Image 1 (cartoon, rainbow, N blue to C red):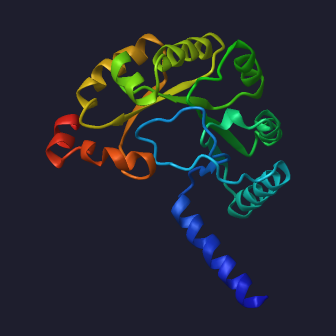
Image 2: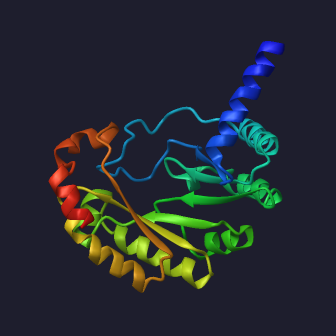
Length: 225
């Protein structure tokens, strides 16, 4: 219809101007399931219904059509939940590989499923990066993400480095851990992490219980400086 076409054209024009020549990124939450119960997670419902594989392919098709309409390259960040809990996740990544000339992809994971077999498969599929989280020293990190988790994350980083896969680390700053950020950076340097970045607690979902841990403006300045 003419009105709908005009609206679509207007939306595309806005997206064209906003993208400013950069890659158009899709942050794709493909599952709410997770094998961890991190205390600061913005989710508190891990049983939300999931789209089946055909519906996921349909979304990818729409994304490809949008990239074509905008004449842009793209990038997809797969996240959850824990994306590796989907039995069809590697099938989805193989579909991405078919369109490598149009978009890249990265994976945000808790790292617990990254054994040698999984990482070997990933090397073939050539993700742009894998991102895991480190929240401080072993005591602080494991208090948030579960006993023994930091060791598993560091083992995953070592494996990814051995197979030549770029790694990113996310650090969620709050009152109990923000002063340890320099130590996290040093730890990441030792494990050949490409980039470390930080975010703040979102007091939503499970993280609502930690709203008192949100940094004050003064603490933010101290953290940044």
